[in-house]
Image 1 (cartoon, rainbow, N blue to C red):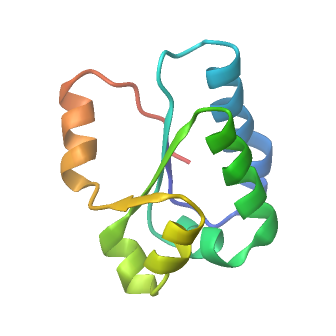
Image 2 (image 1 turned 45 degrees about the vertical axis):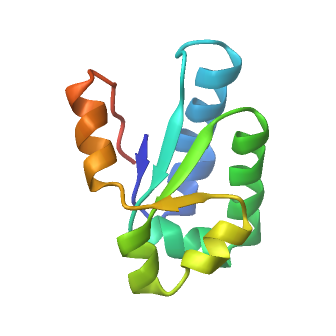
Length: 106
């Protein structure tokens, strides 16, 4: 899942519940959530959003943030402190698509 909107309602009502249930219910073997753009700033600043990310990670969902974007927002270190894997994701996303991963974008 690629999360790029800073709209918290979208994440509270759609993206986080779907990611959590995909993992817990076994709908997908692996679940990755990629924070990209404005979502990274939200993750660095919003405690409730951080709590939701933490719950995903505890459940076994891999959470990754785009380093280029988080550097632009000045939040790379903040995201790393939350346990989020901060890396350049352009190649990662391309390889995932080539390897037939499904993609949802919020």
